[in-house]
Length: 117
Image 1 (cartoon, one colour):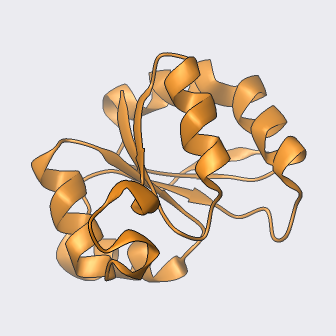
Image 2 (cartoon, helix red, strand yellow):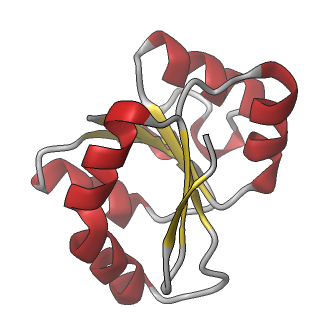
């Protein structure tokens, strides 16, 4: 599993995922850093076969309209602190890995994981 973590989420999430066997980049690792436009993030993710992890609903809209990014994880927790976010991923990482084998768009929050496509 390879991911690209969007600017709306902390770099700490990418660091955590890397430590747990998920090849991760954060937008801060890109040349334009957090100013990287969404279309560029999508292009990089699709070229590198990465799942975009974001809180930004525009990525879901783009998926509906254009079918990209190829894979998308929407974090719909609202504002939570970083330790709570990391615990959410720690608790659900294996389930997410399994779901992304067959599905393209998944949403996660503190209560549930929902498969959209």
